Image 1 (cartoon, rainbow, N blue to C red):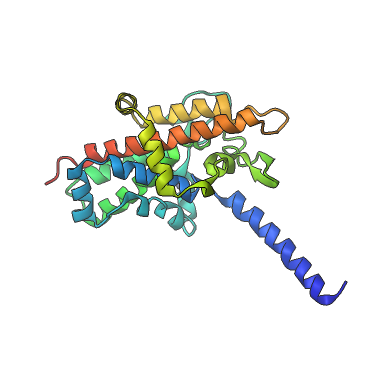
Image 2 (spheres, rainbow, N blue to C red):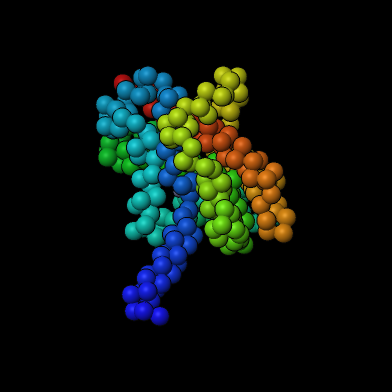
Length: 267
Ligand SMILES: [Zn+2]
């Protein structure tokens, strides 16, 4: 083999390995999913809450801060478990004493940061950080495999092929199942938000963080994990996309409502 050709070959292989590595390292909705959740939340915010977020925290669009928690996590290894909760295999609901005894998981972090954001006696800087975590974590807790099995690390250890690429089950449910290039993220979010009836939206609001987590757990066990021969059928893919769309819109609407409850006493 010519030297140039050989170097090219080595570089290509390195590229493939790197590609696989970065795919496997992805944890949490992909950046697109979090932006969609942030955009939907933003358009469901009450005007007075939008004003507080802009005036006091200098944030003009929740989508712009939706991926911050994933960025800082790269240098803060101890924060990795804050983004999910792994549940004991065979269990359908989250139990703190069993699944998150130290409070280092997404469900308990949402509660912790909610208390920080609502506390007007705390420094603004600290409350702003709490707000940035919340915008991200409310998205994460709605991803079914963020309530996956401890044993397979939320589907992170389950490998399969999709569109000619080797991926993990976790990555697919982080948004890998969705064709993001079809339209802009803003259009995607606007379309999802418009599809939901007001009645449905109000039903989704009568729930708490633990309910959101249990819904995710149920979807994980009913739809994400059952694979036939480790292969993705057409039905599996279309059902998966439908679930992901619904989870993103639910996360956005619930996030807007949570911020309203945490910030409404201000002014
Ligand atoms: Zn995350």
